[in-house]
Length: 480
Ligand code: FAD
Image 1 (tube, rainbow, N blue to C red):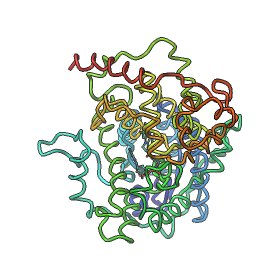
Image 2 (cartoon, rainbow, N blue to C red):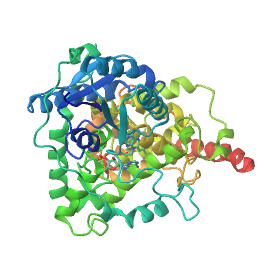
Image 3 (spheres, rainbow, N blue to C red):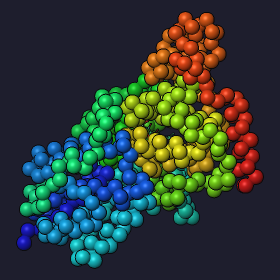
Image 4 (spheres, rainbow, N blue to C red):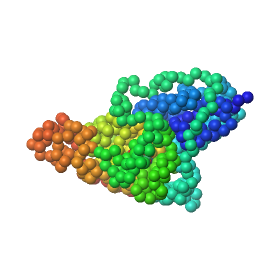
């Protein structure tokens, strides 16, 4: 009997450095690469609209790559366990391999699936493709999970030289007689109303693009990353986040590429970039050990924080649409809507503005990001929002409230970023680009702007709203 093995792809859509694939290939005569679309089991965190767009491209690219090896991706839809059982029955597979995910809903589901398939008599094994270190491998001296990044990353640093990527296979076994794949289009991942022009203009999902992009970054822009990464008008960062989220490239490969160019990845000029990969690890460490942090603050005192009730819907909508009247915030929210991505510095600014100046719950911001980011990642998004709201691990203290005008003047000095995403402000001089409401009316008129008509007047007063946020914070302090 030929040995038939199922490789269950999830967010590991690559051939390179894929431990489940390498394990599947051992003593394998027939390989069945499978993807099961099962959004119900991921609720309430099934992929949002922008993620689904990316997933479509990534699955198409995976299928194409497999076809060059004479095989292809078997796409199914429905309850993952039922679908896997159907494929086992049709192919006579005796083994199944997949790579682990760490967010609470998929973790529970995968645990149940592993148990059920083993009870059916299958060998079912999971592996680590997406992290440098498993969340349980890194612990404090007393065996506890970390809650502070610097200590966590120091502990990882001592072991960084141990991790390296696996090679991509050079051949793949043929598929057995198997059920027909669903056409990718049947998953209906692409939007019905085509709002995705900006996404198509900006991104190329898939492993080939991920490897090319990582190589180009590591051979070039990484040198200037430490200073350029904070300037949203520049393409100073790697833009690898969605590729990493969907597992089109893994962090071990990224690290290996860095090592090929630079002897020590933990030294300048590349240390700052590698540390960001560390933040990604930390985010997964946290979500694994504190699964409630997708919805609730890690620092429980913040559950008592009084959020704004009055006018909340209108203010949330203005933030979502990039119509707050605060240029850096609006530019960021429009970049997000158009491209499915926002620069990290601006993510921090818009998140601070929502949670502190508008005093709207961070969960509402996280939900919007979940639907609109192509790199929406439950671990990184929960960490990012809790960090910004001041209620997470290693968070900026609550009372450190970003001033979006000063942030703009510092990191978008010439206003190039704001001018790009808020073209109605383009003719304002640099001096007023981050605070048009302070410009003399003659100057506004000359620039073709009537505040409140061509561009909104600020929806909140920055100073008064900052003070109101600090007053609300007194409740948290009292709860501590
Ligand atoms: P680079 O600067 O080139 O960094 C390299 C990689 O490191 C990134 O691709 C990413 O995988 C990882 N990384 C960088 N910063 C962080 C971070 N703070 N936390 C975790 N990983 C990090 N990142 C996501 O991938 N998905 C999200 O849903 C997400 N939501 C966020 C929400 C908020 C409110 C904030 C403040 C940050 C969020 N981030 C998120 C983190 C960060 O903004 C993005 O990872 C980064 O902007 C992606 O761009 P890049 O690939 O060019 O990053």
